[in-house]
Image (tube, rainbow, N blue to C red):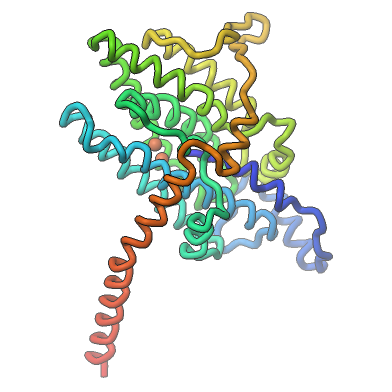
Length: 338
Ligand SMILES: [Fe+2]
Ligand SMILES: [Fe+2]
């Protein structure tokens, strides 16, 4: 999932004072620009401007962090899934998210930043992850709504990244998107069962979950285009293909129809079809809440980060054992060769 936070951090790293470049560098940059303009891909070993590299490291690592932090709110429900089938689906989904994190960390490493460095930035609170994961999962319906809305928003965000100009990222995204579409469907399916075959209390539980997750999922697309100055550079580089607001609109248009089939209503009295625009109008997003959550003051920021750091610390012995084993094997190979 979850590319939203990237636009935020970039403001700090905007290319203000670029160093003077040599004639050779200028030539390389021209070649790079021409390849991007032709819709070509950049591979790990190709020359690239420093700022392009930094932007990608930040974006891909924030995306990776979001995948693995995103495992936590759903992980809370594994032991409380209502049936064996739902438990198996949820376990598989959470495992997929772990895999997405791994592909993405590997893609970020191709840009020359070590995984330890990337994880260090997450654990120290320096790096961001998608703000959506700082909301609590209060009932089983939240798990379904996360699949439907959060994975659904992630797909909207991520499908254009399959054509991202940095090839290792684009390749990772192709596989990730295939899996995300199953995540979205399993969430929707679980909600549909509750709405169509469930009790009155279950239907109310689904509606309550939709009420709580609707606005945060719209925030997943990041700040409005006007406030996302960095987007222009990312668009120029073919990292970003569609603007935040356009993606958000696409998501609203698609989701409103799905909500009708489900039989839930979105918590937005201004949500209505606009014949002239051929899109759904929707109400104002509470950007103060968004910035508060991004800034660390969401309902679960501390809990999520605390869990991540604990998991990392608890797993230290596994990493140490693997390194000791690798060293022992290398030693044996050296002895055999001697
Ligand atoms: Fe994912
Ligand atoms: Fe997912």
